[in-house]
Image (cartoon, rainbow, N blue to C red; front, side, top):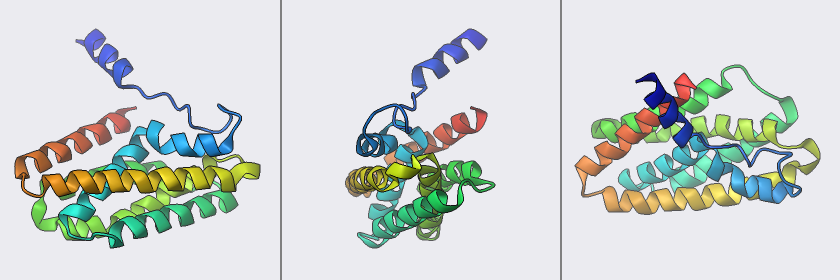
Length: 181
């Protein structure tokens, strides 16, 4: 059982290629970061799905992007903050809860920009200081695209409550894996 679990975790492990120092281009690092950081990827897709399900067409994604960028600036200027990683994992728990408890979707969806602030903060801390603006341009661009992709998925899920719950369960499982790791 332990060997099977270890093998499964190795298969789902995502290397952090997008972190600064792995490529010569800060823009490239920024473009890849939201795609290679599973927590960022799932938070952005989940927020896009919630925007569609709660009919917050542009409000939620734009507020999420703005909060994420503001967080990046704070991280760049002030460094890490206590509880940053917990808030990032918390964002997945809240997105999962919103999908699993449809009666609370609007309230929980509106909390996502707050969590995005901490995702952005982590980006700002991870960015090479001299390349912050190029890195930020990359991660904001891809983050917007991921929010749009999540929104598209959310539009498809509007009529499928069982699939919404399956997505929520996937987010919940992902958060549990990240808490263990």
